[in-house]
Length: 119
Image (cartoon, rainbow, N blue to C red):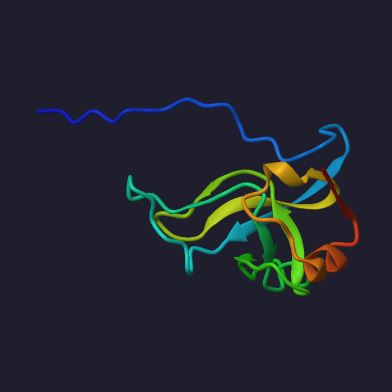
């Protein structure tokens, strides 16, 4: 008996206000503290504010933060169900606030000097 897995195809969630002007950095997204959804998957949503020290040391895994330690914004949904996974952190660009899973705090906005958040 074979097992079938249903694949859902959806459009990529766009967090950028101006998609032709941005800079991303390759990162590893941590699975620590990520809760599984109803399908058992651990997904870190695009637009999550990230930190942890990955800008100074590429071997450090990016973790969710929303404070003065912010270093970037997760560019795409990232599946960390089976452990830390590769991702991309936006470090320069224009982000649409209404596309984020959580609005950045004033401290996070100050820390993310090269990211502009727009309504």
